Image (cartoon, rainbow, N blue to C red; front, side):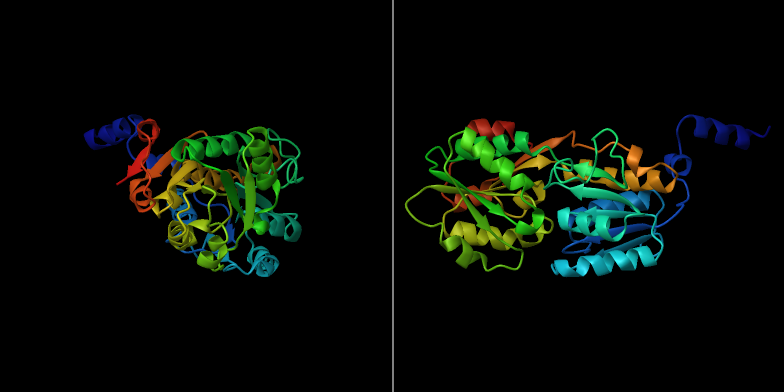
Length: 322
C-alpha cells in the first residue's frame, strides 16, 4: 500500500475530517415555522441555521423557512405551504406554531421548540420518554424556573413590593399559571400585563409607574428578543427592573436573564429533525429538556436604573455585560 494511502487511513482513524465522517446526505426536507420572523438576525434562526448547515442541509432546497410576521392567523396557510412542498418534518417555534402544525399536518413529524407550555397538559404528547404521536422536541420545566426568576428579582431589588408578569396571550396560559402559583406560594404580590410584539410599550408600562417598587418578569413567547430594546427603553423610562428567561434579551438591554442557553439547547431541534428524516419516529424520540442554564446581568441597565448589583449576584453570573 502506498504511503499516501496509509497516511489517509491513519488520519481517518485518528478522528480527522469529522464533518466528512458524521454528516450524511439529507434524506428529505425540513420546514421551519415561526410566528414572527425567519430573519438571520434572530437568535433562534441563526442558531438553528448553523446546525442544519453543519449537517448538510441547504436553505431553499432542503430547509424551507417560513414566518407569519406576527400575523398568527397566517400560520395554517404556512403549514399548508410546507406540506405542499413535501417537507418530512416541521420545526415549529412557539405554542401557536406547534398547534397550527399539529392541526394542519397530522401526518408530518413535528419538532417543537416550545418553551411556554406543558406538552402533557396541553395534550401535545403522551409522555416525555415516548411522545406517542407525531410531535417531539424541546420543552421547558417552568415551575423550577419561575421560583428562580422571583428569587433573582428579590435579590436584585431588596425593597421590591410586587412582580409584574409580562405575558403574551398567544403563548398559552401554561407558563403564566405556573408562575402565578409559584408567586402565591412565595407570598409575592403579582400583576399580569398582556403584551404583543407590536404594542406601544411606553404607554403599556406607564400604568406600572407609581409608589410601589415593581419588577417585571417577561414570560416566554416567540419573537420577544426582536423587541427587547424597545421594551427595556420603556421600562427604564418608568424605573422598572426587568428579567427575561433568554440570555439574548439581557444582551439587548434587559437587566437580567435566567434560562436555557439557546446556543447549547436549540441545535438539538435540528438534530431531532435529522434523525427523523433518517428513519427514526417522532413518537419514539424523547422530549428534550435543557441541561445548561445561564444567568446574565446587564450592568449598563443597572446603572440606568440607579441600581447597585449585589456582589453575590455578580459572582454567580455566567456573563456580566459592562
